[in-house]
Length: 293
Image (cartoon, rainbow, N blue to C red; front, side):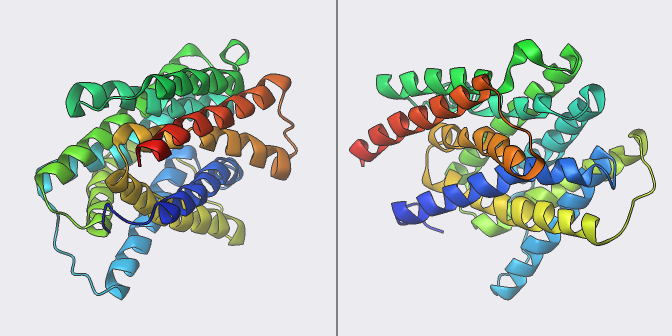
């Protein structure tokens, strides 16, 4: 998919990603009633691989692997690292807001992109980043988290390895001509190998098979997992690493809103203010990007 594709299409894909990944926090929370966090993460990844494989087959693409070494590192960070650290955070600190700490990812990406990709942001965009960071803190309410500092650190590490994967993806594209769908599929395949190796070391229980678990896996694995990560890789090919990462700051706000709508978890005053600050930050950052275009 070309980098010069329609800006409107990119906006629509981004909004779809906000919905899928934001709602996925609620779906995952429901899924923990039927499987452990690690089992759910592994099953979701396998469903995502199956989805991407089907899309590749239907689109007539072959299954020629992308460059092995960079694709392996991409899978190790974007798939294995992200799943392991966020699930460890859930095990150590339970469910709740602590899992959303992985969305410190955009700030790590900005730092890494400046060091490794020499990307720069305008002053107005830096102001937007600061406003978004304040909004994220308000949503997370770190002064009122129920988990331990270990779980907080693990979740933030999940955000760091996710940010690292964004840099790896950008550098891979700069050095190799790769198909976005194939790259998304193969990085997920390589990323699943460490998950299978680590499975015996994580607590497990008998899965509660049935339509509820299947529904969770279809949403989490097919929509948010397979198609969601494909959309993310497309956006990385169209936008700078920093811009793509900042744009997903809306997802924690969507997660809070969907938890309010579907689970009756009414946001606090701080969370509501945080969502408004993130919305304002995204508008500020986007206006600068539109002026550049």
